[in-house]
Image (cartoon, rainbow, N blue to C red):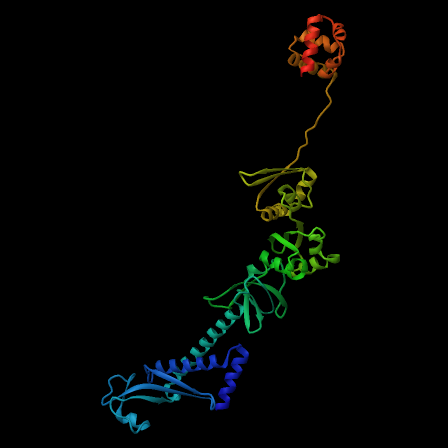
Length: 417
């Protein structure tokens, strides 16, 4: 019996990842609680000893020897006490050995239930200790089962739950599939698996890039921002302080191997846009809205909004399917983005009559002369101030209605402007 007991302890220790000492303590506590709550003889003060060499548990109740028993939970008669301890005396506090078999079937069931609960708590404590500080990191496991609660993933001596909303939309996951997940949080207080997992977080994509791109893991390339709609599209902005390093090229990898590995890990359907971060906001938004080309960008600091204009052929491209491209770009930058169609200003050549009228108005306002004289100047071939500056007084005197005084005044006024 003793060897069987130790085999059971060793089996539990190996399969549940617990120490033998913790399992033995849990067994002792289950026996103690069983004896205290027994319907046949519920004792108040109970002790349990374990002999590791023999592999035996011994259960005792602390009882006071009395003449007449008033409370069987804490007292025992002198006659009964002497059946185990012949030298017992009244008022002695003795350790009364309890045979677990005498406690009844219900008590045995309670003991088993208590032990199961205790082992689960020990497992949970062990798992929480092992995974403490790993929140936000990647874990690799195997899918053990799938039900209405989500996808259960098995790790070494631990199990995690990825709810359906934490699964990538459209991705097919099957039992026994290997899977990479992000440890979202530790479930310390609620029922269920200790590990809360996700594949939809933007941080999941960041960790994949850190794993696949050595320039990111060593700090040469920095991830500035990530915006993601799981299963559809991700935008990631990268930068570097090294002039010889192309941050986008580093992330894409030779022949696109690095980014293809990441896309495959994301289920194969999610598009990943890698853009170059820039401290100049106009350049940054232009990069974020690629492949669309922008015609104009205006920054409104008060409303924290970027007013972007694009040509008709670029409008749909800048917005993206169901507004996805502009929406992700806005999240990436942390600015509101308003996109409108760009309407270019159409200019036309002035007619001869319009050019003449424009020159007349220029001379009237600029020289302080009347419209008749201005028209005479235009009629003589003067259409700009530059022409008047170059004209001599004799040239001006040839204009109809011109006097020496007016000629001198016009010449001086033109040169003063």
